[in-house]
Image (cartoon, rainbow, N blue to C red):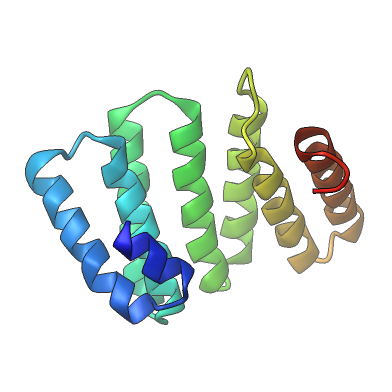
Length: 157
């Protein structure tokens, strides 16, 4: 929790060692727990903000491998794919960023009850299409995200 709070406060240099400790604990006592893959993905995000992008890619890829080995559940897989896409975006690997966001969206659309993560994925994919100058597709996705959030959270949220 402390690492998450420090990361949320943009204190990445302070969050990173705490996240490393958490990863080490999961590896030692609970490598099959869903918290492990979230810890790996979260640390990857922190590394992006610390400009350690190549290292971030290793952790994001590991998180996806752990997720795929641990569960057949769609949302954890979509989360790991989204985090890997975030790292690819930081590396200016736009085609990979686009491809992975498409995969995450397909997984999240297939859930029987969509989570609020669907809105974030719509926004991320819109950003990816914007980066490749496919503005009509970006606009459609952004409008869908607004509609989703209004229905989910209300017009005044």
